[in-house]
Length: 335
Image 1 (tube, rainbow, N blue to C red):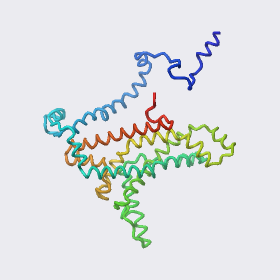
Image 2: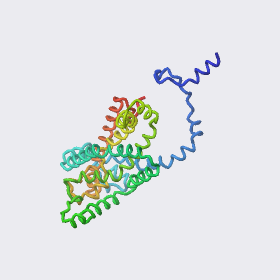
Image 3: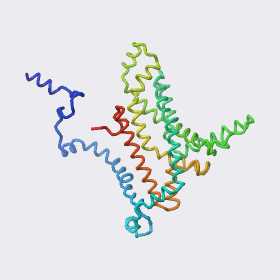
Image 4: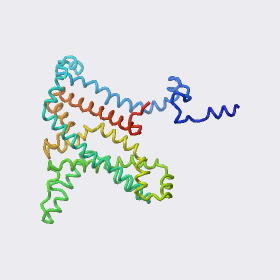
């Protein structure tokens, strides 16, 4: 009887059993957990401090979105907040009535949609192709070469593309020697969306590839063997084994990308804004920068930034809800 009782206590919980009927572990007091985990807490303290100082505390400055903020209104930054006039939603009314804001929003959404269609699937394809390479040394070499540009700054990336595709670049010189007039790739506003997508692919596709390679390593190899025994070819194994195994990671990264839908790369667009013109390269990030820093209209720029953050939060929550509806955990798991 005692042995049977011991076996029942050691039995893992049945996933089909209702959560309320499962045997719960006893809760460890907070003081005991702190005493047990203090080395881990000590290691995470610097990162938590950086987040607090550079991410959470600056959010308090969003109050200027509801003020006619004047940094010289008081004797210091804090007194300027208190002395500036509160205007409620006046900055938002001005923002939504500004045609330049809607142009920047349209450019941002267009570039985001284009990159979701033509850029987001590329790391998945690269990971699947690289995972099929038999030679470990060759796989490691390709992985390093593709991943290395992720560590380059946008200044270096844009400079590289100028040297390769600019009016005096390598491609233009070769075309002129062949008697062909080279196109203005770096200064053509009509093809700017293709240019920035190509730059993003070259810089960051390797990072996404690493993430999907890690997800591929978690797929049970027996599934491939069983499907091969059942007569499934390479394409059917890809469709019925590989992609379902990658689906949770795809959904998670897609949710995160939708959360950044209105942030398409401030530095990348600021560096190329003068070359192609404001109409093609003005996105919300550069719009906020110029309104806040260049013109000194801090309240107006803060209103645009707060709008961008609010839309990103809504997109994350909606995408997370859709993920739950299709059976995925999403970014925020349901309790």
